[in-house]
Amino acid sequence: MRFVDEAWIIVRSGKGGRGSVSFRREKFIPRGGPDGGDGGKGGDIVFRADPDLLTLYDLRLRRIYEARNGEGGMGRQKNGKAAENLVIDVPVGTELYELPPLEPAEAAPEDQEVPESPPSFKPVYEIGKDEADAGEDEAPVEVENEDEDEVPEEPLLVDLTEPGQTFVACRGGRGGKGNLHFASATMRTPRFAQPGEPGEERRIRLVLKVLADVGIIGLPNAGKSTFIGAVSRARPKIAAYPFTTLTPNLGVVENDYGDRLVLADIPGLIEGAHLGHGLGHRFLRHVERTRVLLHVVSAEDASPEGIFEAFDVVDEELRRFDPALAERPQIRVVNKIDLLPPEDLAARREAAEAAGQKVLFMSALTGEGVEAVLEAIWRAVGPRDADGALRSAD
Image: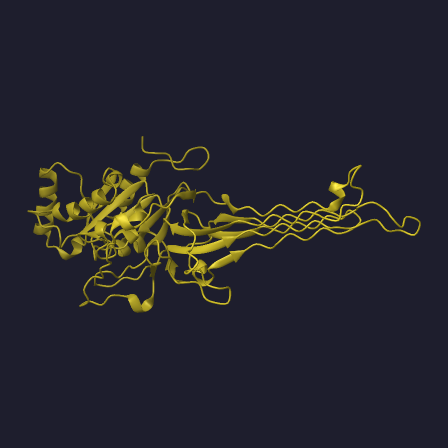
């Protein structure tokens, strides 16, 4: 299934049922009083975080979600049935933003397809298409950066970060009262009832941010996918050219005590990513929720004289995108040491020690140094508490 991390939909709650206008009519009571029942409540629109979902793809297939209307009231004081709520399941980690309503000229009739992208933000970005895989000689894809002043601030409605968490986006209309409620000493035969209240309508933008304990970042072709494939059962696409990974891949690592870590392989970033260059901020947001960053560079990009230059490129993009990300705990790793002669590897180790910075060396392909990296990850993330949740390293 394609990984889609952004979508927008229109949701409408149900209308309340109309109250009934009815009078009691029996064999020996030809002129009984009013007995019209109330209308039923319309259905709510409810969003629910489902841990089994990993993408917003299904929300691209259907743009309008409408709950059912409440049933109308009936005679003999019978109330109409309330409509069931319409529950929309989304992945855990989904944020809901409220978009302004469409202008009349933009609103499509019911028998026409809704526009593919709303005018107030960038077109929905769909990734994971087989035909989108970049070849060895292809240039990195660049995404135009819109003028931020032209994009209005969208209010955040809710951040669904817990499995089973729910949010009522639109409440159904209240059912109207039947004529039974309007009888009085001066009006014994009311021939009117309340109509049901209308439902609510919202246009909502959904943004998925991957939830993971560890985010694996680095320049393209650094071997991040090889590492996550080596330490977990994840099977990401691996090839010897940049931008092989076009979607965040998740892997689960379990230790001898049954503790689990979720690792997210974030697609490679390039200089200018905070402006949308390459795969850009479409993926930078996926590291916002991670507790620890595993920063991987290729040994080919880390010379003894400039071993930290490759790290600095991505660190600067993190800082410009969100200064808090640059302060996130990092584990720095030089990968692909199997490509280096022993003397070149020794020179890089000496350069790291001389700079006084902790750098690990590994080969995700051969497995050399991988266990040391995993141990460093477990130490950085911390042990589990009594409830099974990961505690911080502090």
